[in-house]
Length: 361
Image 1: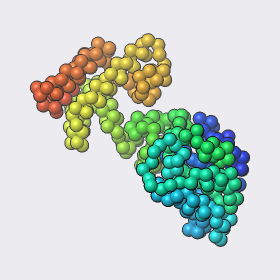
Image 2: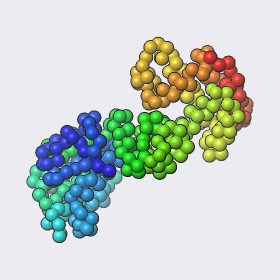
Image 3: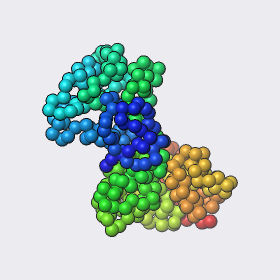
Image 4: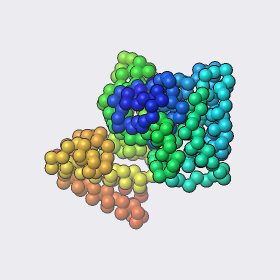
């Protein structure tokens, strides 16, 4: 899988790239390579992907044994990496030197006894070896831009800031993951996966791969397929539990409750999540009736827009008064459990029976 940043020039021209600027989803890196790359941000999946593409472009498989090396800044001094970077490549055109955990680019205090000669590093950034690709891998949300070294890197290096992603960007990335397996990734399936595992790219890519193998080329990866094969978070299971309660499928709801308890989920935690889901449904119904859009509701109550969409569907099953009584019953159940008046599991079972039997809208 390759990704191109169309706004990013990798022919020696210095510059900064942010994911918000990405228009196309092809993350390839083309020659001629820059002498220094800085990859930083919270999207570990993309950092690893860009790193992989840079190394692949710089070195053949045979050359990697001789001309690729990595240095952990928590364990070794920067001078070791720079000496390697200034060494002529062996049986090849390029050498790749990877610097990991460059804590000195941040304001963090690292637990290490290694002294780093940052002036030496600054000198190298000013005059990097033309035969080496120095690759700095920084899994940090922010860099300390007050530091001279960071300022030098921003001027001289090719900088990839890989942090914030729009949902559209994540969708297109996962579409390409599915396409590698010959599978079709749908918006419906994407929304269900986001709801199930969250917007974490590595986890999403693993789940998309599993779904793609399961569906093959003939069946699209839709929400039904995701629920059949994909991993489900505790929050997703609680959402399904609420769905069954609101649809008055009491037996199914109790079965799922017991399944979660068998999976060692704490009943009080389940109760808290049930209450949270009912509150989301109540808030979504309130703001929707007040004329707010799905995205503005998501911003107001602090949840993913897809969670708002699902809650809106649930809100049509119960009216506001029933939802309010359900929240009151959750609070009452919490009190009875914590004061020892009722067994945890029995109290949850009684809560499910009570809400399932409530009058629907």
